[in-house]
Image: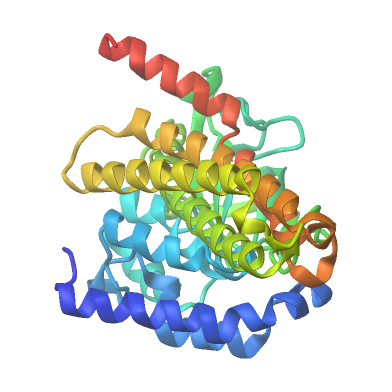
Length: 381
């Protein structure tokens, strides 16, 4: 159920001020320390950001997809690592439970996820499994009472601090997606271990790491849905996650455009601000047009999802277009800033590195192309 307009407007204004006054001044420090300050995480909890997409019955804000997208756009106006701090709780780390969990599972976990007491992660990718997500090798064998889970997951966001993993594992002999099931696996279970955080190109402060499961005994009541439904659950989770990421891409693009305009109106060459040179104007115009198009696609698709429409194709299109778009905008921003765009002090090169990941996670651009083509053909055009 949507918030009343006055309440939602107040939330947007609060998030906007939080981004401008608290987060943006810390961007350089987060980059240098590769960590989000603890007091900032506490403020995020107090604001309810960990529970944006979780129903009010479980302590969350219960935002619609359209409302969540608008909040994500605001959060995109700063270093993506800030959003990633609670992003798994809002999206891929909690939505499998929201969509497929039974009453007992929801009662046990969702209130603590919404409050930020528990951090969640989504464990699908493996050393040999990425885009072919139906080929998971991690195995969960039922022994008559419990499942025994063994395998390794790779590049798992927030694994360093996660308390609960949604794990995709093979439970049967059926090939491909039909043999995959989903499990809720607490970090505290014996046999669960997390590797060292990876050194990454960008998005410093947001950690990814391997997660190892060594004959972990998982109670049968921790299975999400029926055996063999894991892949379907994962795809439903990713559909929503792709819209959220698309909205973040829009926010980053809008922030970069504003930075470009501010710089171009002050920086002078050939006796006038570079904003008055037509080739600079062309780059600004291209960036603005693409950002507006992405915003319209994201918000329209989000509204369609709220209305119960099938938006598999539209969500993939939004993710594909928005993530590619923000890469082009970031590249133009470096060009507009010139030498300054390559220097760390201005923050443009940092965002240039940060946005590169958007074209890879939650499904690569190439996977989105396949989904868009498949769904378009299925619909007859």
